[in-house]
Length: 168
Image 1: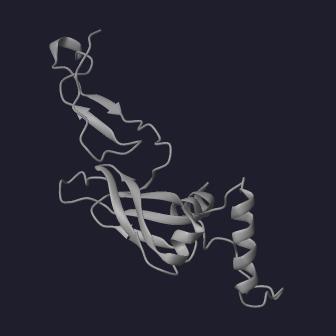
Image 2 (image 1 turned 180 degrees about the horizontal axis):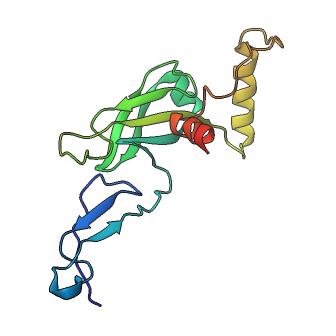
């Protein structure tokens, strides 16, 4: 029994194996040692989700930022990146950050990172904030109780979650 240092290549995924030639059990009758296979288990990230070489992240954004536009900081593997939210952006919008995903094992580039914008609704509002929201509500177009077209509920869910549900 002995300890080995193994270099894990960037971009490797759970379930992939590394083959270490000649590091296995000794062969019988003086034959050379076999190979040792190391099966990789990658720890889950608290908020980045992996789909192949691509990463997915849901970012809470305030209603005023979606309505009026602005800049938000998005965490990536290489640190925070500022992205611009255009005026009138809808909740559930998916933004693509090219080259901010996982490195490809072949060494030929990186995947993308997809950011899904979610509306952050405050739980506690001051009286001034409540009054401002009431004033805004009074200026909005007439409310309709007409239902939206039927959907299967998958449109707002990230792709990797839909695939995971399909394949278990």
